Image (cartoon, rainbow, N blue to C red; front, top):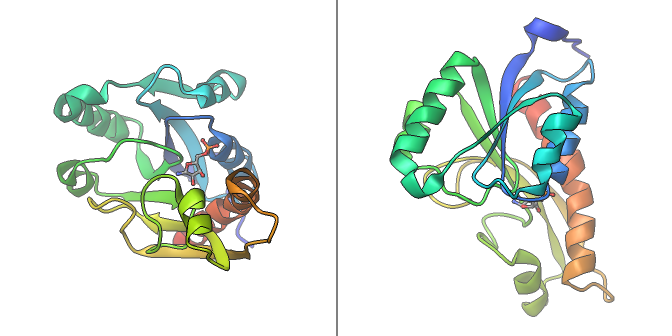
Length: 192
Ligand code: GRF
């Protein structure tokens, strides 16, 4: 197994909008010797994103941007990505769609985690929809980001069985647990 220390690691930025459990998990992963990434930045579209607490806790720079003025915001972010030598953007519960222009201009990798077995159940409320459709299985996917929602090339997926007693809350908890294993694995895969 490759061991990477300090400056050898690729710079990563994590974009969040919510509670940031995937962010926390990626920070812990990035501290391990086997991690190919070092998280240098946390970016959010909302000052209320609960996950921003991890910036202070783990002493990582955070930035909050107004996506209502998307064009100028994305321009600023691209400049920052260059300045901070960011090689990987990880979207983790980030609720804004990055423009085609941003994706084209950011020459490195952008990846996302989604709580379904893509290409099924793109978008929001995945667990409710999965249950309504009486699916037998669900799961999570890590994929490259394209300008279409939840549609880029899939890097890794994890499938789980839906239990009779599952509701949207229990399912989201069980899927999230799998997300926390899958996201680091996908990062290891893309840099291996
Ligand atoms: C996760 O289920 C992720 O797959 C989805 O949004 C949720 C974010 O959770 N895109 P957290 O903020 O990482 O806890």
